[in-house]
Image 1: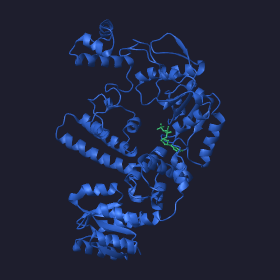
Image 2: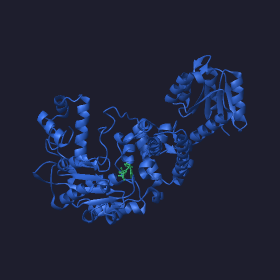
Image 3: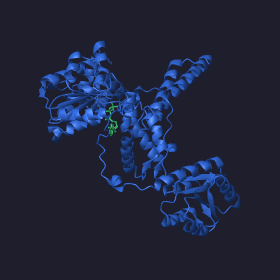
Image 4: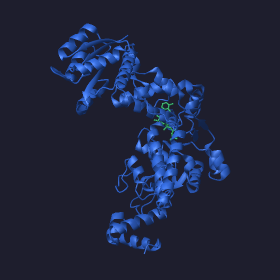
Length: 525
Ligand SMILES: Nc1ncnc2c1ncn2[C@@H]1O[C@H](COP(=O)(O)OP(=O)(O)OP(=O)(O)O)[C@@H](O)[C@H]1O
């Protein structure tokens, strides 16, 4: 039985709340003024206080402050009228655990009180303050399961050997983290560590991103650019999603790995590469080699030493320590004081299959910490784990309806309408799964703003296709060739300058003569 203090100057509300909670066998103490409430806390040491925001002799926030002087762990649930949402927000900011809006819904009231009591119960348990204040290493690799022990062994064996390493594993299993560890334990640690995601950069730009380009090698190349292979000199280059590299780049990469040499795009000078390459992929490279999508010689070269990261669902014994780690990191980042994860919440986390692996777990804990009021992360604060199969079933159903309806309405844009609908659903699911992280969503979608068709999808990603800050250059589409890119740049700039070649050349940073020549060569006249 818990002691609950109910403070309200409206006799009807006081009666309603008290009797609803009495029926659950709690001991109820009541007060109708701020003064009585403070005295009641001193005398009865309640487990929870339910406090009306507007009292005749004081403001609820002030009263809560006085409560907390006497008992800083007393959870306070505010009661407000709907017009007082500003106060409710203030109350939450100042440490209330929850709030209820009048007219009181008894079911909701009981739920909030039960949750608050659970928080109080868990918060009363002593915690290890040393663990909370220990320095947080956000690059630490957490996990002791046998498969992770193998990973640590492999890192130990290969870190300081200057060989190429291939890290394999599903998306979000920690491949980049392992690449960083390999770098940190290597002799190259004094040099830079650079990472390039080969899937996130359009093919035409990836070559120049990796190898650099000479001035004037293509339109827009108004100055020489040093690529990542040169920038990483003396250090380590992490090539993520290597399975997404085009055939041309695969051969260029193979040459760097074999001969340690390359040329910048449009350049003749041969540059020596002093870089250790660590590559990663979630793809089945063996199958890609068999299907002709990946060069066999590059595969053998990369696969000389490989490290496999297990999926999170196969690391059951590590789940708790990962949750604990992400709880501490999120609290630190978000300035929250959530001290533990309730056992029923842990149960839910254990039952889930984690298709997005450790990254998904990290996002889920972060979101839940954001939602948590008070010191304990309860099951209620976890996001909804609707299985993907349910979502796809619903999407399928809605899609059928849309096609049928628009067909009957004689739409002449069925293709666009259907693609836009599917795109929107996909973006919605991905955004939810990555915890609303727009950049991560774009990465997982493997697309850029220019390829998305629906306005709704762009809005979900909080992108405006007409603005330049909508991610990468809006006209860049994946798998564009350099020539297509150049054509697009010139055409658009000429449109913007209403055909004035002089102005267009200026904007593109090339000479008028080069402009004239490229317009002709690219057949843009
Ligand atoms: N064992 C772990 N301990 C602590 N944090 C981890 C662990 N594994 C992954 N993470 C965290 O999860 C997130 C995703 O990890 P990472 O980017 O290394 O995955 P990845 O396999 O490279 O993913 P992708 O294939 O999608 O690029 C990162 O924030 C990383 O810090």
